Image 1 (cartoon, rainbow, N blue to C red):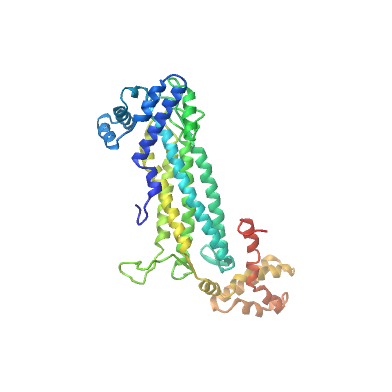
Image 2: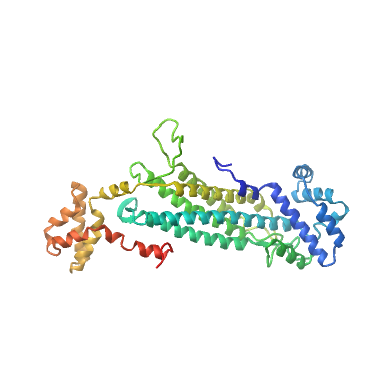
Length: 433
């Protein structure tokens, strides 16, 4: 559990029982592959299928002596199977089952994450359409720039998360590889047809070439993809945190009945969901660095990657699962305040139309440099005097030589900032032609 979030699906992927269960499945499949080649008696495979089992507690007990998890597992399985256990793990090395099982776990994790991404994308699209025409201030460098709509902000997130979904599915395909090729990947003691059989049965591709392990560039790609998804969630959460600030207050996270914001200040409603998402993103980015460090190993293999992976792979998949669930909750319950958005637009005294005035002057034949200077002096005066920009521009004698009063008034029109919104929504697939 993380906070108030339980992990029934993703957590199960990474239990010791699941991991050992996959090991057993792989070992049995390898025996079947050998039997098809006539190297193991079919009757022995039947016995292995019927009797093979393990006890996690017993495996742990044996590992205290062996100090080797796979050998402890095989010893325990042999206790269940009896004499036919001599055919189990024939010609194989530990990493044959470790890496092949890990691929299956990462596939299962990717499927869970993909389903949650689908739900988030669906929500973002629906809420983008809901707020398509809700005008709000666009900000660059944290400073008021020109108006956008809140729907456009959500549409941008929608489009980005679709790209992240594509990347996740791409990474899923590149991790869908197993290997049953022996101690250094040469098939010296096992037939390649056994590998082909096992991988086909498990829905995997055989690694075209391997050492003792599947190469860790695949895992690094997978983890960095998760970190990329997390960073997009971080971006969204950071924006929500900023928009919830008291002096902005254009949106607000869902706040449940009985929820408390502070032990000291009863008035507080803090953006805690967004803050958790931002914090978790840092963990996933750090894990991605470790995954990249795991690519370079000594010769045909060392185990410097192994201990790190036991942490970063479960933590990254579980962490992103949590982040996606929280973002779904956040977007679903997000409160939006259009009136506050308009109030914030009005704070800038009409200065958002400065570019329109400048371009109109250029269109009348004035140089851009001169037009910029004339508009800027009125804009700075508006900041200093808190007088409306329209009034100052309308009184400027030099500007009046180029623009009539009706022309000036016509430049201060919000619809100029929203007339292409539907076009953008069509481009991202939220509106049909």
